[in-house]
Image (tube, rainbow, N blue to C red; front, side, top):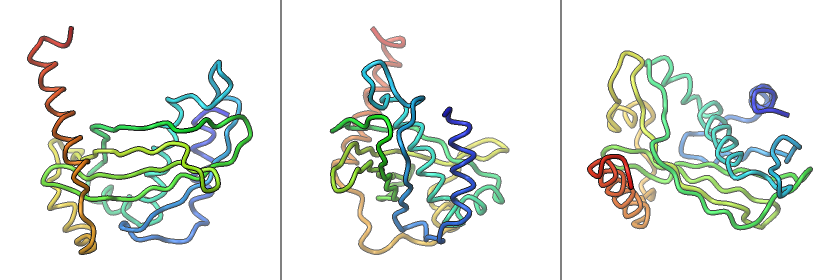
Length: 182
């Protein structure tokens, strides 16, 4: 099953799921199909990233956030991510993808996405995202928060995420200064 068919089926399933708040955790279930496999007969690492897109859409659609941002003329973009693969998923296995917002700073919104099979963590990722205007330019995080409301008081961005953001940004800047890499 290619991603377009999976996406269509996903959008049909989302319509019947219960609503969420943007600060809640969404859970979306998937099954590994033949098109997800690589030559090692486990789910390809790139497929995880594509399925993560669907997990973020699940949260945005079920919370009503997607409608709000599209009405405002905004759209989300992933600017950075880090993922750790812990175990393999093989053909036919069912798994859950949990998606939640874990914090923000003055420029970015951060999300955590965790793949699980039963109680076992298969892979976990952190995403750095921002919002752009269809008319051009970026949307300040303060505007996003004005649209959705302030996060829960106990939502504090983990220090390691701040470090990851700083270091990955420094690495990108250094590559640019070096003329695009080595």
